[in-house]
Amino acid sequence: AIQMTQSPSSLSASVGDRVTITCRASQGIRNDLGWYQQKPGKAPKLLIYAASSLQSGVPSRFSGSGSGTDFTLTISSLQPEDFATYYCLQDYNYPFTFGQGTRLEIK
Amino acid sequence: EVQLVESGGGLVQPGRSLRLSCTASGFTFGDYAMSWVRQAPGKGLEWVGFIRSKAYGGTTEYAASVKGRFTISRDDSKSIAYLQMNSLKTEDTAVYYCTRDPRNVVGVDMFDYWGQGTLVTVSS
Image 1 (cartoon, rainbow over the protein chains, first blue to last red):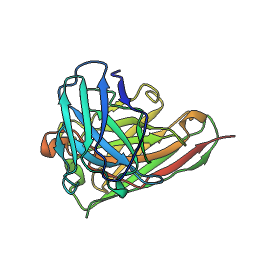
Image 2: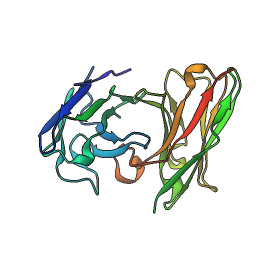
Image 3: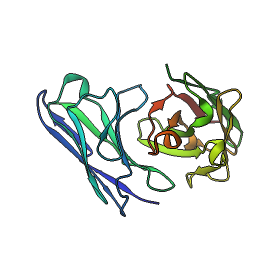
């Protein structure tokens, strides 16, 4: 199975900060990667699909990039509602695998 | 409005079975692949398995941790996806989410809609 390694596992930041989360795949996955946001007690929400496509309704401060093995999720200017846990997911082949998550906390 | 509603969770003893349902509305269910994802208490997300639409054979894929014990099926006439869980183990304790995958509609895999989740607790 493809291993997805996210970093950092946790991050403290302030409103207005620019934040980058990275995800590395154990083998090439083209651009078959999505990013999901999860708030406590809630279902995950799709932010980015196909590595860089913004899901409808998601604010433009979220962006994704990368291809092959290295991917990034960037939040250009943190808003209070962005404090959550973020997961990457490879959908290149089965079994699909998630990264371990990055918990974004308020500094 | 797209909605996915899971049901069937609860407390079950190790070794027993449980069937979860995911009732869909607001879209043409038969056109979409469906996946199940779970989350153990305080842990990250784990993909459980997937069922293709009937147009693509209705076939399934599973995570190694559940293969041979869990079975995903679908009833397009009722817009329901099922997760049959047999030989349950304590480590299967988790919130189980169903998700929609529009791969056959837009040509890209993603989990664009999620249910609210249903808690399965495996304990004696």
